[in-house]
Length: 151
Image (cartoon, rainbow, N blue to C red; front, side, top):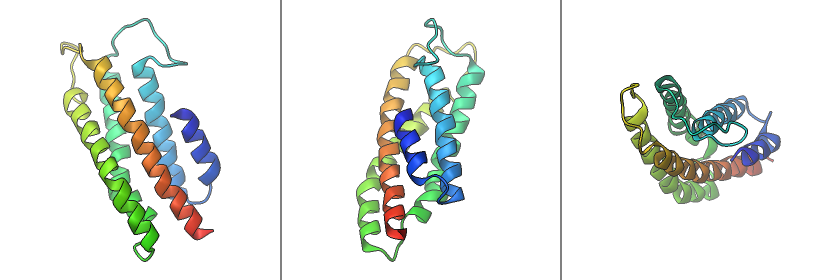
């Protein structure tokens, strides 16, 4: 996911300040995700994250997801362009499915306390990671379409 993000930033960075900020927010979410999931370079000795780390991650994840739905997708899809509308119709169901997974993760861990049972966190993080990977791929197709249309 981080490699794909770096490619996206290299390809579209600087073209639009809103896209740049959104990709920077994606990077922040990915870094936090990697820390929580214990992925390289943040591997840890199988200890559960603290409640504050989970809450912070959920807040950033919700901010990123909300920005996509309420700010970026309308910007990325030119309603006058039939190809863009067709692409949006194709990718929005996948984006919406990942949004459901994000919201479920937040419902479960967004207000977690030190006393809560985190026995399913690894499985939930795995499911979330898969959903985010698919979401980023779909979002990148929208960005690429916009970049192609404006070139």
